[in-house]
View 1 (cartoon, rainbow, N blue to C red):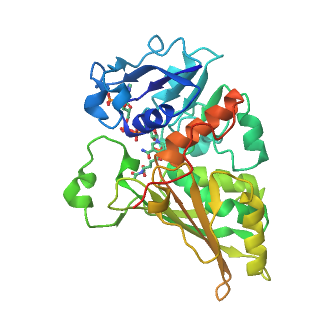
View 2: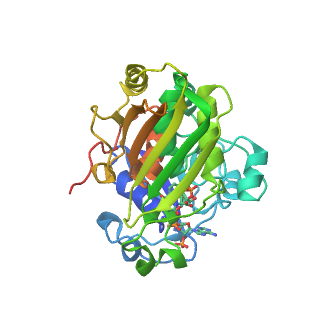
Length: 343
Ligand SMILES: NC(=O)C1=CN([C@@H]2O[C@H](COP(=O)(O)OP(=O)(O)OC[C@H]3O[C@@H](n4cnc5c(N)ncnc54)[C@H](OP(=O)(O)O)[C@@H]3O)[C@@H](O)[C@H]2O)C=CC1
Ligand SMILES: CC(=O)N[C@@H](CCC(=O)OP(=O)(O)O)C(=O)O
């Protein structure tokens, strides 16, 4: 059995990790830690995690996380780097936060405003062949942000196939409120969120912009720039990303379709929907699958790719466990749901 600790077990990402790990046949759940909620019964914070209800959260520290094969860090940005440095080199450490996602220190400084901690293998196996190679046997893994997972998977095939132009890429994505974490935020109070959609981080300032650009640049092998606008939607979970890019002159709808079929034909967790069927967040609720659809708007010469994911499942915890499976050399799909919850 693989012994696993979760730091940040009281939060949304930590709770989703535990929901999925409870169904993982090769995992034994060890230490569960938190910050201010240390000392609290898990059942008070996550009443849906019945079998773990009587576990009491410990304070997060290298000592309470010691002695495990795998440690998941589901902590606020900036909290992982120092902690990870004090965990043994032979422990698999999987960071759900942003600390080790970006390779460019200047971009990190510009968007996060703190010192760059470095970069780890990026936990998006479907990005390219290199991603899976680097995750196999990895001891440190950076889990992607939830928007970058959705946007990257929507657009990567168009860039990998050389169909899309690297400028004038526009991404507008709607997220459920759990994406913002459990902390109290005035704009996320029920009265503000219920029944309304609202944009935020408008004008290129959202910290996921450089992460999306990093991913698309990697597959395109030329610098890709994107305009990314997130919006908040009145639902607890889910992301719907609508992504468009100009195509090179002469690209046909058949070529676009073929590029996406080639990219995702054998992927278990990225499903290209049948032509004409468009992704919905409802269909991927609690599933580790991302649904993708693509069309060519011939009138304006743009490819329109739409993806839907559960931000807490494939967008965080499911993606993290998929990477753990690769790191440990066990089948990638172990313990991960490919079906959603409906209605
Ligand atoms: N929510 C999402 O959709 C996604 C989240 N992520 C990332 O996952 C990480 C966790 O996010 P999320 O679960 O949403 O956030 P939450 O705010 O819901 O949870 C944060 C967790 O971190 C703990 N914590 C906070 N401060 C400290 C501290 N100083 N020392 C130790 N523990 C601390 C909290 O403990 P306590 O309850 O005791 O305060 C809680 O367990 C973040 O880095 C986030 O960016 C990544 C992708 C998507
Ligand atoms: C709705 C909402 O607020 N979403 C979060 C993104 C959550 C996430 O995936 O991002 P990190 O892991 O980088 O925090 C945001 O826009 O900041």
